Image (tube, rainbow, N blue to C red; front, side, top):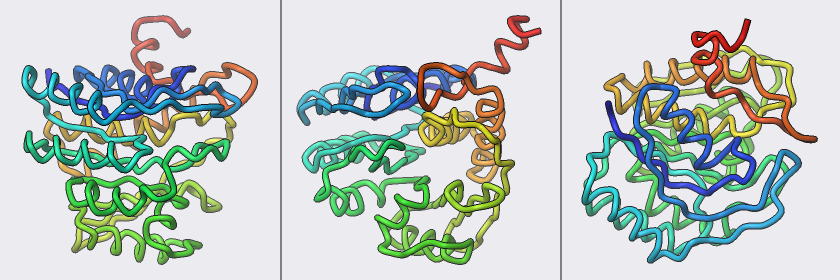
Length: 267
């Protein structure tokens, strides 16, 4: 069994962040481990507060994993502070971490800033060059590139810019556009358009976290980038189709639907 590490924030209600990542790793047959960068105060209705871990604690968690357990892939999610970004970059370089999937989480669906405004440039300088795959949604891609993204050609241009920032592969997610949810994958030479069915549901809490974690798990298991992304999209599609109507707001996806179905929990 491959071991996959998530470096991200904790989600109180379990639909996103560390909790979604661990569920995804488990559902895809890998062993999940975690480094917590922040504890958020949130539920299905929004994010109401955040307490960051100190850079020293974050570095200590990373040391604890890499000095003891082989890591086949790393998913990096929510990091809000400049010094924490630098600490993570330092440690990932020190341990020659492989298959790094960077999900540049900046703003929650409810509009809460999950990254300090002056930390964006540090993320671009320190983490994007380490990333094997970067997975921004459209608002994140706009923030990173400065572009206004209105269509697929704009997405391709954004992917190209992020690639030249040092990422090996860039997946610009098109869920914020109208019509089918088409993503653009770029490896520096070729663009691949990945169409996805748009599911009519409000319960999409943690979809970005889940997709990036699924890509990391698939890479850890030896899949190519394109296959890892395609299989991750299939996984999240099922999870969204059978999402859970939990709470009063935006409910989570169903990370274990396929496993529960095989176990006979769903008729």
